[in-house]
Amino acid sequence: MSADSPLDPGRRYATLTLLRGALTALALTLVFGLLAALYTIPALAPVFQRFGLDLRQLRPLHDTFASCWIFLGGATVVHHFLGRRAGPMTGADRWRLQIQLVAWAAAGLGILVTLLFRIGTGREYLGFHPALSALIVVGWLCYVVNFFRVVAPTFWSEPVYVTMWGVGFLFFLVTFAEQHAYLIPGIFADPIRDLQIQWKATGTLVGSYNLFVYGSLSYATVTLSGDDRYARSGTAYALLGVGLLNSFTNFGHHTYHLPQRPLVHWISFVVSMTEIIVLARAVLDLWRVTRDHRGGLSPVTTAFAAAKWWTTVILATAILISIPPVNALVHGTYLVTGHAMGATIGIDTMILLGAIVWILAETTGRETGRAGPDPAMLRHAILGLNVGVAVLVGWLHVAGLATALTRAGLGPDATYVLPPWLATSQGILLLAGGCLTVWFGAALLIRVAPTAFRPTRQG
Image 1 (cartoon, rainbow, N blue to C red):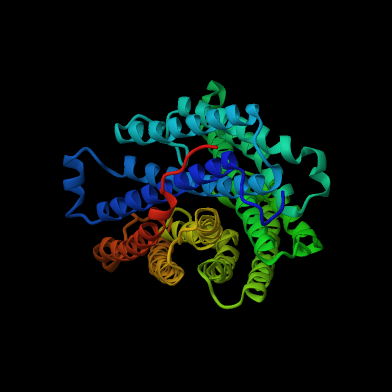
Image 2 (image 1 turned 90 degrees about the horizontal axis):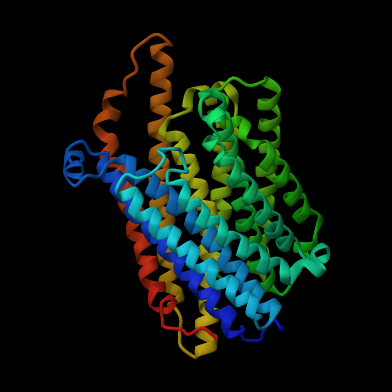
């Protein structure tokens, strides 16, 4: 299928359905993030508790739907690629797609309801009931089959983004299964072993969705520019190779506090630093490609440019917090939360927003003859969202560093307390950054929702 041909109606339906799911997950992420920030204000916590809400529900809901946003955003881009590449869907493709969509929708609704009623595991980043994981895997397997049915004959000659997605599909299944190792009685009975596996699996799962995000960035810039030389370059494949190596080793800097061989930590540290430097180069190069071919700063290039700057910031903090003595101080503080939030929103979310805005404008604007979201307003919303996230992430770094320094000054045998000024101000400042982020995030969603949720029919 030509790059300029309209998408097959069935694949267009799949792309828009997943796009809507991604935006819904992003909206829920913002809502639960704001509620969690409000809960940190001591005067408001009792109000939440009267309604049966606390951080045991709000945090896993926020974390889970943030992960859903990233995976569904990546799935949107992958299905857009399939629409351009594969032509009309077969009958089997349609059945698998329907199973995928129903299974994921049921899992999302189940996660929302069960966590609100405190039915879950209480585990970090996998707080929902394992029965819902089965639905996720069923949908994922259908997703994998539909992808490889199209690309398998030419997989080894495809651009790097196809390789990233293909490896990411399989890597997710392995790491997701590993995250459920706690269901094995012998592992759950050994807390140290359980933690080692849990944090290894969580760290490597991040590697799987990074493959979808960075593959989406590569695909979007290649399609926008019409130039696939970068996607076939040595730099692109170096990013993939080092990223894969990192995905298997980066858990070490999450587990400095657990008994492990020093060699594991050193390998993790060195490989992590190599990957993020290559990533910084790749994001910069890809942004230049888009800028040079499109001219000016559209919402898409604004989002990609923001990802470039956030990559620089995350590079600096990642180098610092991966140094073992520094990690020992900041582990468990808001600084690590700020780092993760900066990576998730600043890099992953900006890349996916850029790709989704482009897909939405192309799919609904060109093919229906109606105008999509206003580019100027979208660009302002993206810029404002970055300001809000910068305030939030900056404050989390300040709060985390202050906590770490206080911890160091108290010594290992002293009672741990927050600095007085931090104890009285952290809730208000966290709420201020959160409100800015939610305000501009909501502004962006409000601008794209009328176009994204315009009624469509399956072809």
